[in-house]
Image (tube, rainbow, N blue to C red; front, side, top):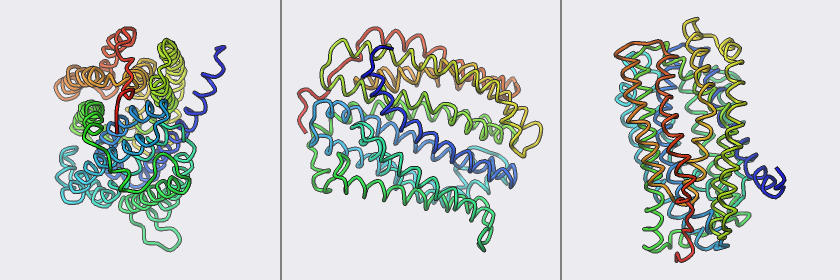
Length: 450
């Protein structure tokens, strides 16, 4: 605790990121709360439709995390020109993925929804939402790439400001369009989708324009951004693609959980939509520290600061361990009160309380795993091991246990959720062992040309 400089930098980076994640998660909570006054089919439909955005979100997170690994180390090396080219590479891959998801969402909404639910009303509501919100995916791709480059170069306040503005617009438009206020026709889930589309479009334009206005690292002429050479593209792909594969393996595994929940019934789907939104809000502090650790360790690795790097990694693990313990206790104690604010049937409230309590028990382990995989291992480019660890845990344990307990044994949701989260215990031991080996401590930019 006597390392003032360490904590000063940690707070300067982690607090804005945490606030931004809190605001984003709060918007999901507000969306879910507003839609919950419609029907349980609307809640389940929007929740299932957002699984498509969840997959896109994780693809973009993986690609942008890969770029931020290089960006953070180039920033430690003070190589701004290379950072701009890494930004161009990130945009190239992100827009390609965004276009694919856009086509799927717009042209095949009902087919996609049928994967998650057998309830015709849930499929109908979700398809209406997905067909509209799909137009926002390309803007989200640009936003992700820009935001991660800014974070990795310690410009964390601008993304926070832009997110606050976008969320405010989204919330206001939800109120207007879902219910038909200020003379507008009530549009239900379609109104929520239109509000999201407008907000994400404005968020993208604001972030890009302000980055260029202030001449930040995530800015410049397109000819400059896309002038990267084959060597940098190959280096980028070698680091980023395992992260993308990591996120795909993990996200498709989590999507399989959603498929199981959908087959367990609409009540279960509605409960998990609400539960997972609450979890995102509670977990934002650990996410903030995890992202800050990746940036700080990346900066230190790029600057070649020796043994200080491992000592910082140990500190991050201790911090997230304590945060996880505090959050877990908070979740367990508040679960009945949280469930009480929603206008849902008693069986849905039972599932929410039970699932939140289970999550509270596992929060400490999840928090430590997050900082090890997202922060420590990825900061040094140890992305292949991280992908293997995450993927094997989800597909080797989580998915089989979900199918066994949810569809074969037909346990109640809280017990199914407890079985699924057991995969976090498996990751913990292997993750700590890898961290202690120091094999992740690699300088990736020392001899790299752009």
